[in-house]
Image 1: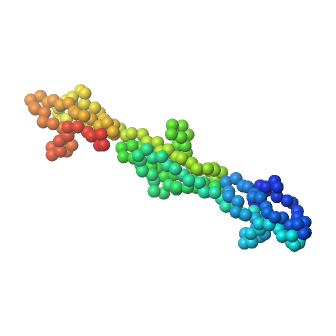
Image 2: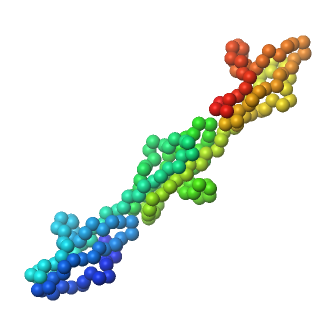
Image 3: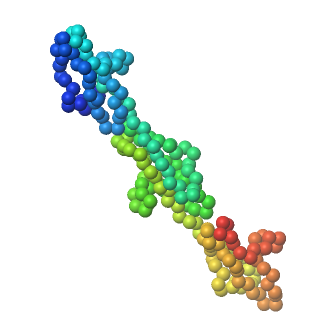
Length: 199
């Protein structure tokens, strides 16, 4: 049985002139029963014993390890190319690649949508379809101001959050000068009046 379990109704012997009409399936966790065979190489399938059969017989149960689907809930992110779409009982999955999402940091895979139980692998004894949820944290970015001897507006933010951005900036001040705007380059070619939500 190779660690499987025989069906309760399968006979332990047979009688010449009677034989056995059929056998019930054996069972094994994480496996599908493929039939009874008269040899350990599974070349000759046995579905019954004829009435004219003589001698003792050994039957070998053939099992195939089950394969189960892995579903990825990506929250609009992109899965790692090498993450498997399924796993096999007895093998599992050693590790998962990181998902990616623009403006976010990947925090790991979880077994639940509330992100309470982190999953880093699938054990060799796991059975059944599994859904993994990608957890992302939105990124915060710093804003550096080059003031050229001036003074920044008090309400100008020191950073911004992806998905929010900055609607507008207050004017810097410098004695004897007029403020002409904020720029993203030292040559003053690209004026910046806001930061978009997708920056």
